[in-house]
Amino acid sequence: MAEKREKRKVPKRSAGLVITPPTPRPVEDNPSLQLFREAKDAQSAAAATTHHPPTTTHQLPPTSHPVAAERDFSRVPNSVARVAIPSGLYKGESKKTYDAIFHRTRGAIIPRRSIRATLAEVMDWAGVSHNTLKAHLKHLSRVGLLKVHYVRGDNTGADYEVFFPEERTPPTTHHPPSDQTPPTSQNMGPPTSQNLVVGGGSQVAEESTVSENLKTSFKTNTERSDDDEAFARLRLAMKEATGREVTLSTLVELDELLAIEFKIAASRTTVSSAPAFLAEHLRRRLFKKDKRQIEREAAEAQPAPSAAVDNTKCPDCGGSGYFYPEGYDKGVARCDHKKLQAGGT
Image (cartoon, rainbow, N blue to C red; front, side, top):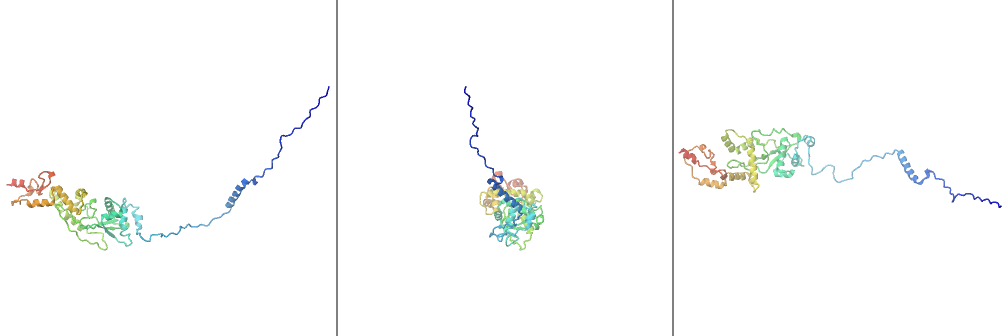
């Protein structure tokens, strides 16, 4: 029997080529970290070095405008900002009116204590309405920052005198007594050349000059006597009817009604003379006729009988001389006292 041959044993080998990896570089030599290392070193060097840059003042670029105004400016006292504004002396927007007048008087380049102007001019200066201006003037006069001097019979405006806050005086010093002053907003405007008197009438404008030192009082007694003279007939008629003396302060409501009636009538036409226009308007409302027609009828009327009669006992007019013959809608007519004469005969 044949012998079996032994199998040849092949030694085992690793598949493929065995490559030994290179030795890794140290972390410090990594190129990507080199950039961060340089930045870190720069920060460390900056932190270690105590370097304080010199302090420099920032100067504005040169300009042609001066720091303070050299022209077109007004001189305002510090008391306006330190006293008047914190204490509330300027009510609402009244400082606009005060500044408008102040800049043209004591704040001007050539200062002066007062200025003469109309209400329309002051309205244009301050940029306010008519009613707002009257309220401002009333308030500023009350707190003593402004004085408005009116001259009866002068249509050229009023004198506006300006005061500093430290120059203020008590508001009651220059006001007339309350029993003779009509404290209404309707009297804020300057008076016209005529005064409204029952039955018509006018007053000649009085000449007036303002002294150089501009005293604080301004013909108060004269103006008060003129007011009494203007309303003498009305006050006498009221006293005869009531038996009591009438003061101007009690005519406030009547003054307001006349002002409303005048505004309504004046809104429909052009007015050149306010008192004459209002008198003619009231005459037409009362008599239903104009002045010429009334005068013509009075001239054509028959003369009154010579026999003396007491007109105050007339049942038609009660002594007033006028009555409503056909009711209130037909107007007023002169009374001929026929019923009184018929009763006496």
